[in-house]
Amino acid sequence: MKQANYEYILVRYGELTTKGKNRKQFTARLLTNLKQTLKAFKKLEYRKTYDRLYITLNGENYDEVEKLLKGVFGIISFSPTIKIESDLDTIVDTAYKLALDENFKTFKMVCKRHDKSFEKTSDEVNRLCATKILQSIDGIGVDVKNPDLKIRIEVREEDTYLMSKIVKGAGGYPVGTSGKALMMMSGGIDSPVATYLMMKRGVRVECIHFAAPPYTSNQALNKVKDLCKIVSKYQGSITLHIIPFTDLQLAIYKNADESYAITLMRRMMYRIAEKLANETNCKIIANGESIGQVASQTLDSMQAINDVVNMPVIRPIATFDKLDIIDVAKKIETFDTSILPFEDCCTIFNPKKPTTKPKIRKCEFFESKFDYDSLVNECVKNRETVYCDLSKDEGDLF
Image 1 (cartoon, rainbow, N blue to C red):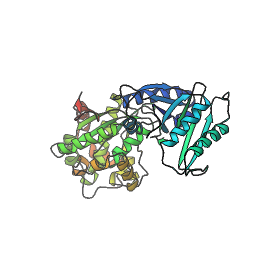
Image 2: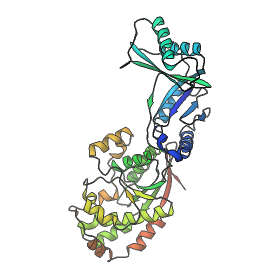
Image 3: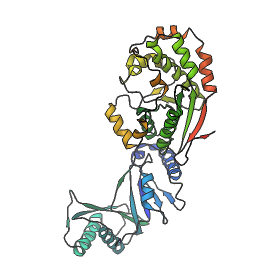
Image 4: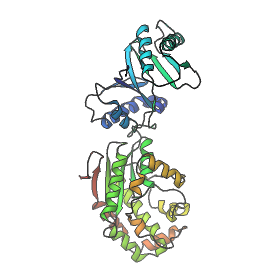
């Protein structure tokens, strides 16, 4: 029979403690993001202190809250917690009840006495609680180095908190504290992983996708929408801009050597992304490029492609091995969707022998043969924007 009654969750900030003067801004953003993520739980109450955040469950299901809490960036860890008055007898009795909940052979008490005026030292509290547990439960012992169970006690001036479980959080910074990026989202494995990593550093993400109907299918577009929905859980929702890329893509193949087609396509995509980023107040462009993985991701190709924009381009997985990327994709549950066999425009129009060492002057020569500026502007003007959220079945048009 369960003895403990977890009515609170103690949330630890982790990396936010290093942020100095920006600390208030970061913790305020974390609280906002928490409320957004847990909005379905109407009874939750929140209290923020300097180094902790406390969530009162008020009867909400802890297990369901825990599932969502694990994905909130800015949290290093959290614990289901019992709050009691800072009374010695109550602390000892509650520690014993917590132990009754667990299946263990060895245990350790860990008390932190934040209130230095409390009647007993941390070590004395540890000893009193351990004695009660040892005397009341048969077949157990203390192990201070590698225990099966740790019961933690935080004695504060107003209340004392007890917990026996620490759940690892997502880490990083709260989404929104580092500005906004425009992510180039394909339908592959890499770009959703890059999106996740950008969010982990506190960057809010909008996405841009290049569609080339009738050469690319509705299934390919729906796959991208589904990927955006999956990663949207880390920031609440994702705005996805769908670019009609067919005319521009055909113009490239009509006027350029096939070996340069992918390089020119990427240059056009970067031009479009920069225009859209400026319109949507995104500070940077980001993508899922990994050095050397394909022809357009050699250093020579990156140099030639980057040449057309002045905005910074961030590549979170630039040095990742493919297996490392796949591991993250599986962790964030995008892998199974990414490998669905619906091809994007880069895959369908991929030339047989793309150049891996494109020359900028040669790119400019091919581009001089057609009016790409007007085509780029049309792409931005005619975009479709949808709102991707896990709580909705389909992207909603703005």
